[in-house]
Length: 324
Ligand SMILES: Nc1ncnc2c1ncn2[C@@H]1O[C@H](COP(=O)(O)OP(=O)(O)OP(=O)(O)O)[C@@H](O)[C@H]1O
Image (cartoon, rainbow, N blue to C red):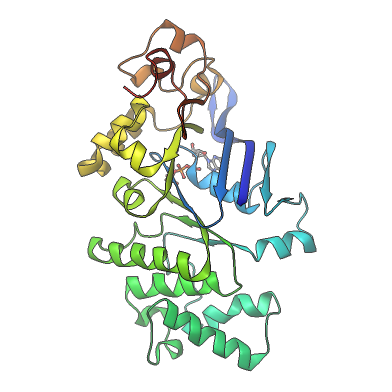
């Protein structure tokens, strides 16, 4: 069953800087479509500024699309933040990168986890206490941790608390935005394993936003690769990892061992969408692509099925008959 459908959403911003006396338009997300089947983890990958976080916010209704729509459990996200929006929102939760920033330092861990239950009016006092105990156990935290404060916990423990809090209202969808990138590498695998276990235990569907190919490889069933606001490739994780088709996906895959360094270089070349690249008719990857032709400069490639279950937006891939 399809839990989430994102249909051709576009979100533009106006940057604070000027370009030829005009404010620069930024197309953060352009014509993005996604579909998440219940119980799957879809990884949204791409370098900094490719529009991953904006897509996550649009999915949750924290940002409004300029065009397109988000359908959750068969219901379009309401335009206004009314009661129907709030009831849908209780079923969709965000997990951010920095657990400390997501917690009130003056609240105990128990109060932090039970706060969404208060907000959504779920349960009485005893039921909420019981729910907090269950959630703490589910995220692998025990003892008297509920009585402690965020600063008394390690980074990994804090991210476990953030997950417990996100699960408190019984969501069906989690949007995890770089949930492990602030953690030590040794802790990252534990949290990723926990997330996979929680998916099974709580029947979750997860949109997993990350620039870290190792993380997405280990946890995601499907991948959507974003470049300057567009999805350029989407398919099963194993298929994409073993035979990346889009030249940008290939660059990302080959960059895995030193991803941080490569991303920094990429940012220096093309970091933000400028007016030229947003208005261009052609492929946004044209200037960095080893296979670019005249057609790529003139005509924006559309996502097309190159093999069953895989879509790629690339003239080179299309003209050469699929995944090389
Ligand atoms: N509120 C905003 N106002 C203006 N520009 C914005 C705003 N939010 C995002 N952008 C711009 O939109 C583009 C996409 O940003 P977004 O944060 O979605 O990318 P990202 O892939 O999540 O990158 P990162 O991993 O660095 O967060 C960037 O050029 C960013 O500067």
